[in-house]
Image (tube, rainbow, N blue to C red; front, side, top):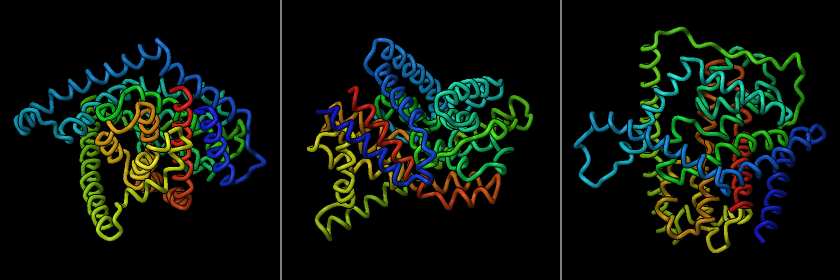
Length: 393
């Protein structure tokens, strides 16, 4: 039965992408089919094999160690702020971003990350039927973040067509930044975080290939990566540490605002209609939860968490999931966890459009115009990834 539901889900997701396609005649179905097969194979490898277990355990342990190191610095500054046995969200989940951001800066400085990003991007370009720039950008988005990635391709922004620009922005919204992966792993199971990151890379290309099909000529397919301004090691380190702290503060501020707003709106809806706002959204998104493989008796609750992620952000939704995790089956937890690991929400439209506009005003306006279509595609990527995972769970 789960395979029939998965096939139905795949047909619906690909159909919804086809309906929104800008040029259906140019869709390349062979790369799409190949990438779906690769997604299923990688998901099986990561979640259902001994090798996958060893790999994910190693990654989780690695991030666990990083969080331990980060905690040394946090306790030095904030030690004694929390009572024994308490685990403040800001200290335990958000502040480690500062340390991981510093590590990313070090790997960037010594040219390790650019080498990895170009290498993986080159391999991806042989599979996805798109250009080297699009493939590099998808990998870079998953490492340096959805706004910072555009700095690395600054030289080419002005020459990009709106179609190529859409693909770059879709990749940025469909992935997550490596600097906050450790934070995710404190809230949901690491194996689902790792799996989502891997298959979202291909999912972004699958949906973009259908919604936004085009062909890149060899003359256009030139990858020019913007070199960072030459800094001393400690200048760079200080900059990345401050950037990490800014991200932690921004995420914290967003959480305060969104969680408080949802609590207020839920209370108003409950008093007026006898059902919370999230409850209503749960019914709206329940059909999508069902085609993702969530059982009907859990679909409404799962749909509410999915909707929360869309209208707020993934952190708020992960907190909600943690609060009701014991009411879900292990299969549902895995499916919803994978769905949550992306930047597909309304606030990301402003973040990405603002990042591009800061580098090239005209192209930033182009991004703003297709913002809703961008979110539509990125949400389909999250649903597609969840369906793929439901096949092997």
